[in-house]
Length: 105
Length: 355
Image (cartoon, rainbow over all chains, first blue to last red; front, side, top):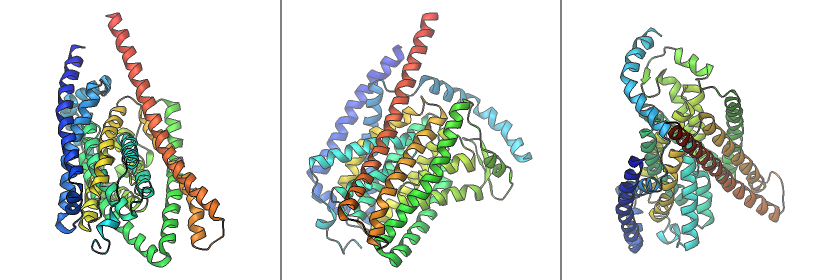
């Protein structure tokens, strides 16, 4: 339980940092929307501008969204997390077993 | 192409209502995408067009939000051990070819029968594909729910996996060994559908489940990688022609990045059949929605006559039904997630009380 609480408080801090960064990015884009729109819609190799922009926003805003859910206590099922961890532990053995079968098949 | 339409005509002035609408649809679409691997795009394009955005800009801006959303969803689900990256990349590349074929077909139809013919083709494709695949998936979901057994590869998938046709590929994450020639049609189908109805996942996810032999959980997560590959390629092309309205893209992204992560979390609380159930429900309602839109195009083509008022009502009902499909999907996901969380909390409390 204490792990959940410490994870939530750490997520709260990260959500605040990424949230502020996200608001800053959105404010910048919309404050200079005419210029941003002009260059992003210029075409040709300027096509990398909108693509780079969405990568940047997806990192910053995506991190904000992810940490917000964690801070609110909305996380993946504990059963699922245990299953994934167990799978990772057994994975190398399973691969060794699977290879000869696959060749034989 | 971009020089022929001025920026003033391409890009609309945004209202607060428009921004809130896009944010909300982005969130709900993201939620559905994070859960079933696709969806949401079919409402966003007509939704943007209803705000006055030209069709090509709506498609381009929608696609530009799709690939970063898919990336974030894929990363989240990869952490849960649900993504087969290799499968996603290989099928994604085949899907790119499917998209190009789909675009050529669209261009041929547009040249032969004009815009109304093209719209009718899209609606027919919607209805035929979604009714046939959706009813099959629904039947299978009901069967899986009743049996309660763990999901197994279909007989067809097992048969295909047993055919030793060069080049054979091993997919460690999903534990599948199958020939490239059986994964390629899944990608082509997904790409073809994406170029036609903007939602390739309605072919990609069932293809990965029933032909390749993946579990629903794995297929829906891997579809996010396919959507990323397809979306990135498509965006680079649209942006080359200057058709992306970055403001629209970023507003939708603001909502969808919250939604996609919530949808991904939701998959950890549900059984496999729930993914099929949500997907089939959305597919069948969307098919009905497109069915209602068909008379408009038949009237435009002169196949039969109908009053303008009736056509307008049918068009509005069609869009309303599409929004309803997304909302019902989101409701089922949130309800299943809420119940799963509650059951887990009760089980944990009971375990603590025992110990």
